[in-house]
Picture 1: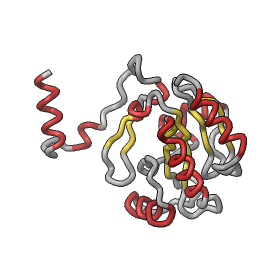
Picture 2 (picture 1 turned 135 degrees about the vertical axis):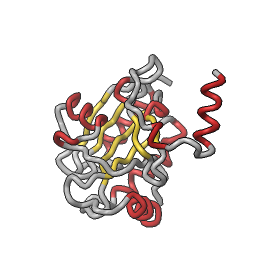
Picture 3 (picture 1 turned 90 degrees about the horizontal axis):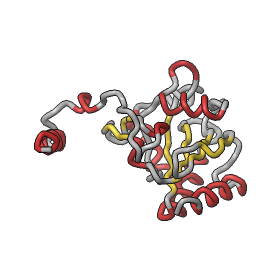
Picture 4 (picture 1 turned 135 degrees about the horizontal axis):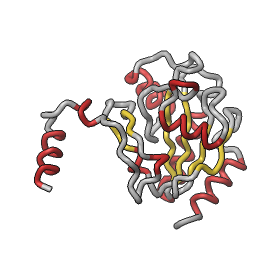
Length: 191
């Protein structure tokens, strides 16, 4: 217990290199579904984040890009997050340059998302979401659903238990009636 306290103090004071905390994910605990037991760096400051912090929430996972015809969906995704977050929804954005439409640095992407669309939902550092280099969350999502993103703004809906409920193509807007209905249904279950 004392060692954990010292480690937390050292981390918070910056006395330990943050890369040390980026160890491989541990086996999923009973409170964290295996789908979520992954670490990704936060977009804004590269701080490592474990997705287990979202266990028990309904998640809409979206691969994003700043220079895409669907980039305007940021506004709708933020509106969904604002409307339903107190009921347990979290939108998770994963910028990717897999389709050559997200060339910027993490700082450039974060500034663009916040300044242009007022994005406040959690976003993570740029990573691959398709093919053999897909990050571990997206590799699992593709394997589970049989569908990898074919373009930017592909969406996966995950229920409170960590089960993938559905996935939606890039053409499905955040205010789409079926998507919103599915989100509301997932939010009403397990509360």
